Every structure is written in structure tokens, then in C-alpha cells.
Length: 146
Image (cartoon, rainbow, N blue to C red):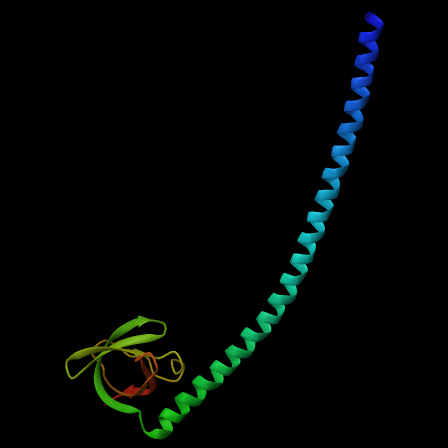
């Protein structure tokens, strides 16, 4: 009886080893398949993102060209306004606040900030500006009134 138990234990152990090895191989195959799928998906994503990036770049160029043409055409149409104002102060590096007929307005200077003089609070200034598509007042020229 003891020998039968030992043989049964040996047979069960060997069977478990084979079954365990077989499961490990199937897991490895599944991992290899999923790794291959992941690599394919990553490659496709890279290709698609490259194409999408090119499309975005082309769209940005078109938008910039359109904005340039719109701002130039607005100036050509005579839609630029000229006002006298009292300088209040700089809001940030790209804009300042000035009172026009007693009302404060924000003026954007990002395109001309290197060409206009430095203003001090309460300076009387003359501003030529246009309104952009967001109704922002974009300064074209500005200077002190003496």
C-alpha cells in the first residue's frame, strides 16, 4: 500500500509539472500576441499622429495667413480708429489700459510693443487701433500728445 501511495504521488507530481509548464507556455504565447498587438497599435498611432501633426501644422499656417490677410484687409478698408486717451497703466506685457472720454479700455500691443514709446500714468496719448475678431482693441500705432 505504501508503494502504491508513493507511485501515485510521483505520477501526480509529474502530471502537475507538465500541466504547469504547458500553462506557462500558453501564457507566454498570449503575452507575445498581446505584445505584438501593442507594438502594431503603437506603430499605427505614431503614423497617425505624424499625419495628424502635419495636418495641424498646415491648418495653423492657413489660420495665420488668414489672420494676417484679415488684419491687413481691415486696415485697407479704413476700419482703423484713432482716439485720444489718458494712459492708466500696463496690464501685462501685451496690453495697457487707457481712458477714452472718461471710460477705461484695454488695448492690446503685442504686435507693436517694440515700436511704441514707454508711457507713464496720466500721459495724454494718441492711439490708432483696430478691433479683431474677438472684439479686442489691437493697437496699430500709439504715441504721446505734446
